[in-house]
Image 1 (cartoon, rainbow, N blue to C red):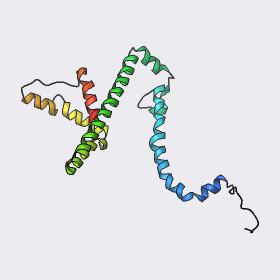
Image 2: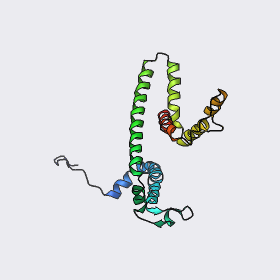
Image 3: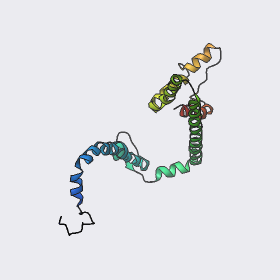
Image 4: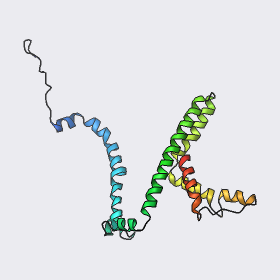
Length: 184
């Protein structure tokens, strides 16, 4: 640069491919994350096409016949649409309120604890359900509530109380779903 020449206030413009080449190391580090997001978030979205098909297991998602909005017409004409929508909204409101209350409650309780080792143990027990999949939670629920071999029914029968068939009586399920969701 010459002494009497003023500095150039605008930086030199570079093209897209020049920028990509310049930042190739960072982009290569980003590539595994982009691939994983694509595989686990975007490819499964192709399954939403099932809502518009008369699905047959043998034919698969893309081999089944296209029916358009007939599945939705069937759903709304069945008379269950309002009940299903109401249940979904009420369950979600209950889940949000209960989880918020439990989170705040345990945060306050843990904040007030003096014993550090007990505090760490309780934190570990509270966070354990986050690492368990819903399939495992379903297996736990099944092993607790099964009519013949369930833990709860075994305890009831040993106490001389009749067994309860949780799977055939719908009145228990709002509480069971609420409990296991709050626990998880």
